[in-house]
Structure formats: C-alpha cells, structure tokens
Length: 94
Ligand SMILES: O=C(O)C(=O)C[C@]1(C(=O)O)C=C[C@@H](O)C=C1
Image (cartoon, rainbow, N blue to C red; front, side, top):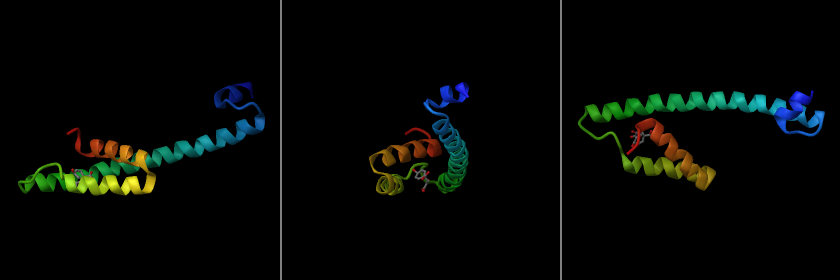
C-alpha cells in the first residue's frame, strides 16, 4: 500500500483508492480524446485536400476564427489555446 500512497500523493488508503480509480477513468478519457483528435485531423485533411486540389489555399482564416470562437465560448480563454493547438495539429504551423 505504501507504493500506491507514494504514487497518488494521498495520505490515507481511502484517498489513494479514490485517486487510483479516478486516474483509470482519466487515462481512458485521454485515450478517447486522442482518438477524437486523430479523427479530427483526418477529416480536416479531407477538407484541405479538396480545397487545394480545387486551386484554393490550405488555410481558411475565417473558418479558423469560427473554430476558435466555438472553443472560447465553451471553455473560456484556455479554450482558445486548445483550439489553436488543434488547428496546428490539423493544418501544420502557419
Ligand atoms: O474548415 C476548413 O475549411 C478546414 O480546412 C478545416 C480547418 C480545421 O481543422 O478546423 C483546418 C484548416 C483551415 O484553416 C480551417 C479549418
């Protein structure tokens, strides 16, 4: 048990149990989030390829403003930073 206490930072067995269980849920959620990000990257690539093949540009700034606003409205200022990271993953650095 000392090992679990060390790993979680808890000071009691009960707290260590709660933390270990919640961390399992967080790891599962993170796996799903990563899968969704990868799915978003694939869908974004389809859009960008269609636009480039048609003679357009990879980036569409007005759409990016909509995406940034969506995340900001839902999550506040850190939502904007999250959306910027997602956009960088999906279309590369600009
Ligand atoms: O919606 C588009 O037009 C896209 O190309 C997708 C996307 C995105 O990943 O959200 C990626 C690049 C563009 O600059 C804007 C948005």
